[in-house]
Amino acid sequence: MLDAASQPGPRNTCNKMFYHKLIHGFARAGSPDGACWVVERMVRSGMQPNAVTFNTVMDACAKAADPARAAF
Image (cartoon, rainbow, N blue to C red; front, top):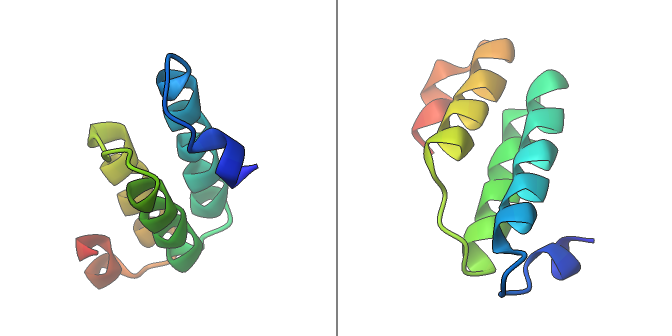
């Protein structure tokens, strides 16, 4: 699914939303490592993180009580 989400084109916004949903899932699970892994995949696929991306990763770090990890 990650490979399909990383395809460029008019669905880029939907694809970014897909990544954000994955990051949010890791945040809800309290897994900042998983959230950061998704961001790394997102960047490698050519998509730029935005404020939603960073806020969701910070949420994952806060839920895991790991504020230092938020500076990925």
